[in-house]
Amino acid sequence: MLDYRKMYFQLAAKVADAMDILLKALQEGESEFMDAESFPGFKVVAIKVEDRDPE
Image (cartoon, rainbow, N blue to C red):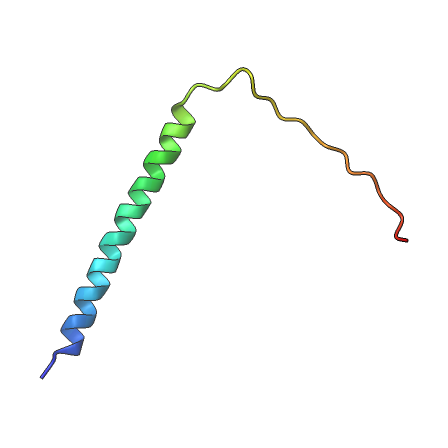
């Protein structure tokens, strides 16, 4: 007979491992982004949205 409890815990362990891998990749990506030099050609521009009357 299948041991569903053992199978469940094996699956849970693999899911936890996958989450650790994804979290590490996210943190490395964020770190690389924060350490990168900024591009002098880019700047933030605010766009004002005018109110429109409903017709």
